[in-house]
Length: 323
Ligand code: MF3
Ligand code: CO
Image 1 (cartoon, rainbow, N blue to C red):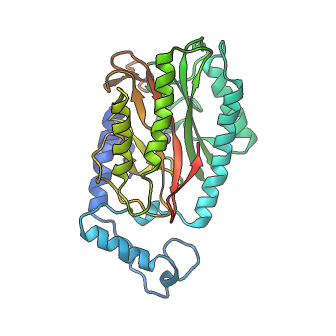
Image 2: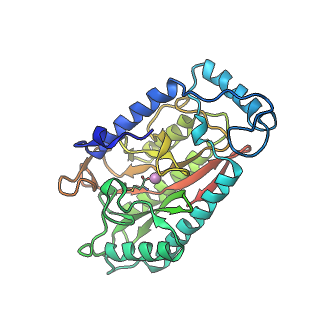
Image 3: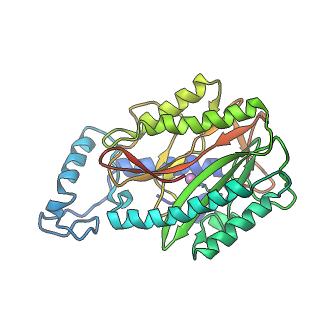
């Protein structure tokens, strides 16, 4: 999935993301070379069970879908119970960090202070902040205020004021496992317009979650979110999406919230990905700061909101791993 550094040099993240999406889809449709197992071999998922008692019937089912031209997940993104438990432990820290922010964020603090909290709570748990030094990102958390769509860089110059809305996006590595979720905060009294944007964006996750079911395509979830946002008079950012996550920070699939339904990768038990739509009050267009190469702004200067949850596909539907 990942591109080597030389492929991404000189590209901004929008080009990078769309390149990544193309490469990953091409690779996935090509079907990766995956070892063919005998019924009595140990299962590829490293559960310790025999293949016939573990993923054998599952693989046969997946192959039927693949032959029908449906994009099926490769083995490397399907997590076994031990890995899922590891990812849950990482998520507990991620959730605790956001819970701390819930009760401490207020008028007058700087976004650098949020970075300090994230950094120190992460260290206290013997964990690592995934954003720090990720592709050169300089801080431990992303803080995106008002017309900043995402990837805002904390700064001691940036002071939160009454009426601001801010997304705080936290990602943690613990014992090698990755968690990722983000929340919106309204600072003091915010306008009814901004409050509605924040609320509708949160509700859009609930709408999307109803479509997270095994053996259903991920595009149904994305399409439902898009439709819901549009019904409410908003637009959805196209160039930046969600992602598989758990064993790495960004895994397949790339997750769109503007796609047609009945498209994209088949969801199967053991997949973990984020639902993290960026919803704009005005137009969908965005641009990246020339100055820092990270901060993504709405083109029209109107506010943008985002909530992010990390979701596991289960046999019955879904489990929210991080929020
Ligand atoms: N949580 C964001 C994501 O989903 C984090 C981006 S980290 C950054 O990708 F370093 F790229 F900013
Ligand atoms: Co994410």
